[in-house]
Image 1 (cartoon, one colour):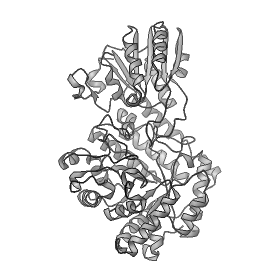
Image 2: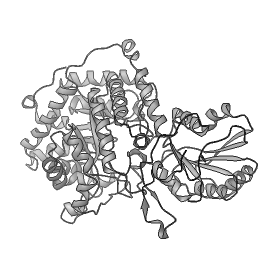
Image 3: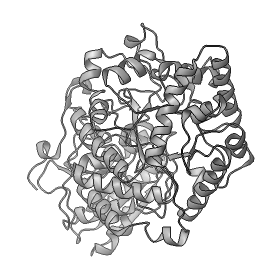
Image 4: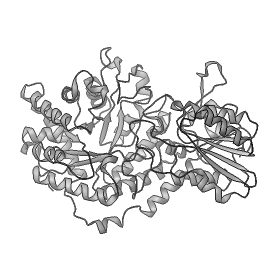
Length: 554
């Protein structure tokens, strides 16, 4: 499939190349067929609703590319959010990265590069040529509801180093890496799916913190950047204008100050933060005026038609010049020529032999093992004795924000720990938000055990978990809290003599965790986020909570 030149396209075809759309189902429906054949859409975005298994994904991408070839002769962007951890859209049959915060704890950019390259090669084999990853937001706000463990940590240099490693790995694996969310979604407390988050920092602060990873990624050869729907009044004349709609942010800051030459991709243009009061059509026009090249309209067919029509009208009315459209389309076609070019025909039988590649799986397993973080306030407190009666209390997992899908793994720590224990062993699952009665029952049962492990998961929305841990700690027996998400949750327990963090609940992570608990594997992870020090009045002072600084010798 040969990429046509911009000068050969009609205006309708050019506008189509600037849109990337989603659809419902595991096979192309009539709506996506119409958009590709009659509106010449240039890209498709996949969610978990579109992806069941690798063979189905392979057939789906092939069908979509065939439809696009018949309509425009230009290959499609086919993108997805395959970040790792809780944000992966194809969740079986291919290699998957750990959660970004786990990678921040492992702190091994060379291994991360190899793992990202391997996962990219598998995505490319299935026909997915764009990954909306890595997240290079800095999670400096522990109350952030949307970034959280999707970030590598809360230090600019760490995020930049690991972000570059992942980005280059994806690119060297043959696909486009879209770093996100510019100019930084890390210090926000609301979800832009619902409303506009506002960042009120000075420009000096932005340059020294939030912009550091984006600047360094741009210098390292970033090919695409996704915009954040966040307001920065300082850069928008005092107004809370979404960065996606701000010429000062996308053109002044990203294009000119950071000297970024690649694609500017928007986050979904159906999110309330950009559509409230103006609708999708006006939202996409404002994004192009600000400097965006590729516009995601991920969900609703009517909104996708509205977006295409609004752009066409804006050109016809002179609000958008043909030169402005051409500048974006030239960038899009140039990168398509580089990353897609002529599509190679490959059978499923040949393709399947390259998936779940053993070398990539070994690298990812090692990263998971290196991520396990132990903080001991008493020497070796986080090690168990296999000869002491043990109770594991394990929370039921759930998606914590709109960017995540519900978990598919039902593995628990007990399934890995039980075979290694000699004394009495029991595991109890408890509700994500345990009731007062459930907490009382669990605390009562725990009295009969010499050592207790209690997992916690996203306590900001599930305060009952915090209550449970505090009651267990007050009981006098050995209690080891384990964070299965953001270890900031552990700061609520200054009385704990030690705790563990593993950042996710992937089966291989739980296997590594069980080995750490029994002393068979040395915990190498370093906390990538700062824990609030609740021993100080107000709990607002922070101290770097790395394993090397606060733990005793192990």
